[in-house]
Image (cartoon, rainbow, N blue to C red; front, side, top):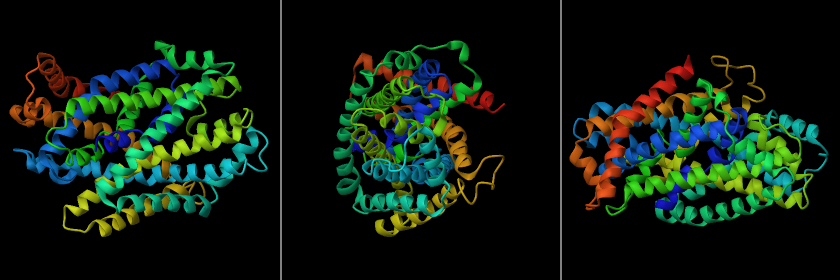
Length: 434
C-alpha cells in the first residue's frame, strides 16, 4: 500500500504543474520556499492525515467521527471530498491531453513545423469541443478498469508496476537534459534563488504547489492510511512520500529548464509549457520523436497514479455507505465526467462563461489548490495537534519504539501541527488573498 500512497503524491502536480509554477514564480526562490513548506508543513500534515486514516479505519467523511470529540470536525472530510472531486474534474482533462499528445508524438506531429504551429495546434485542439472530451473519456475509462479491481488487485498492483517505470523514464530524461548545451543556464534558473523575488503571490503559489503535489487536504491520504497495517511506520512513510515527491518535482525541473534555455524558449510560459514549448524542443533534438513519446507517456503514468487515489477517496466514501464497489465507481465516474465536460469546454464553447473572472477550469484549479487544500491541511493540523488525545497520537506515530531520536521527531511533528503549520498556512493564505 505504500507504493500506492507514494503514487498518489507523484503525479501531474510534479511534472506538469511544478515546472510552470517555478517558471512563473522565478525558479530558485520558488523551489527553496516550496521545500521549506514541504519540510515544515508537508511532512507533519501527512503524518496527521495518516494518523486520522489508520486510527479510524474509515472513509474520509466518517474518519473524524471515530475520534473522541471528533464529530464536530467532520466538515474537514467533506471539504476534502469536495476538493478531490473538483480536482478530478480539471485534472482528467489535462490527463486526456497527454493521451492525445502521445498519439501525436507517435505520428511525428504531422503538419507541425515550428513553435507557432504547435501553439495553434494546442489552441485548436483544446478549444475544439468534442476532441478533448473524447480523450478525457478515454483516460477516465482506463481509471475505471483499474478501480473496479479493488485496492490490492487494481490500485496497489498498478502502482507497483507504474511507479518504478516512472522513475526510470525520469532519470533517462534528466541525463539527456544535462547533456544539452545550455544545461548550466537551466540549472542556474532552477537552483539559484533570487530572494528579492519572493512575494505573497510566490508564497501562496509555493504553498498551493506543496499541498497539491503531496495530495494534502484531499482526503486520499486519510483513505489510503485506513488500509495501512498496524505495523506500518507512519512517520517514515510520510517522510519517504514527501522526499520522493519533491525529488520527482526537482527532476522534472532539471529535465525541462535546461531544454527551455538551450532552445531559447520562455520558462514562464505557464500551464501550456509542456504542451507547446516542450514539443517544439523535441522537434529540434536528435531522436526527438522517441523523447516526445517517452515524455508524454511519463505524464500519462504520473496522471494515472494520482487520479486513481483521488477516485478512491470518493469510491471509499460511497462503499462506506453500503454501495457496492462497481456501482460506487460508476457513480463517481459520472460526477467527474460531468465536471470534466464543463472544464474541457471552458477552453472552447464555454470560454466566455466565467466565475469571479475565471473560466471553470481555472476556477476549479484555484479554489481547490489555493483554498480548499490549505484549509483542509490547516484544520487537520489543528485537529491532531489539539483535539486528538495525546496518547492516541503517540501510539500511532511512535508505535512501540522507545528511540530517543524518534521521540524527538514526534515531538517536533506535534509542535508543528499545533503551532507552525496552522500559523504558517493561515498567514500565507490570508496574505496571498489580499
